[in-house]
Amino acid sequence: MKDDPLAPPTHALVLAYFARREDMRRFLSVRTRASADVEDLMQDLFLKVQRVDGETIENPSAYLYRLASNLLLDHIRARRRSEARDADWRRVSHTNLDGADITDAPDAEAAVDARLRLERLTQALADLPSKTRQVFWLHKFDGLTHAQTAEQLGISRSSVEKHMARTLQHLLTKVRR
Image (tube, rainbow, N blue to C red; front, side, top):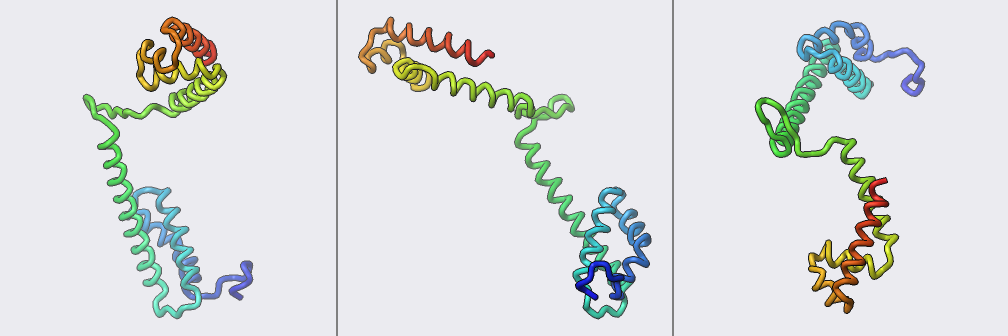
């Protein structure tokens, strides 16, 4: 019965798969030279065998080997595509210096640390009074000098300097924690 998962297999191809499973494993093992790949391929082969259930196959053994060969070719092509993709990525994002592979990307710990510091910085800036935040933004992000910032906001240059000093002290206190 096809609907009963506990029913014993009755299809000739499924029976051939179980009878030749070790032969198929050796067939794939010789060609892949990687046991992890063999197990994956064996699972894929069994899934394909189950999908063919119900079709009439004159030579189940030959059909199994053809399925296995096709799976192996697909596996090799996928691995080559993956290796090419990895090589392209490595060529773009890595440098080779005296045989050492160097990447410009920070490690995961540094990336998490930077993200946490950015969150603390953003929160610290949000805690500032509006005028102080505006002075800081104009000077640090818009690139205005203290005199230009003072002129734009209609305040004295010494007031801009005091806002900046307060801001920097506040940020040092909040971000360094």
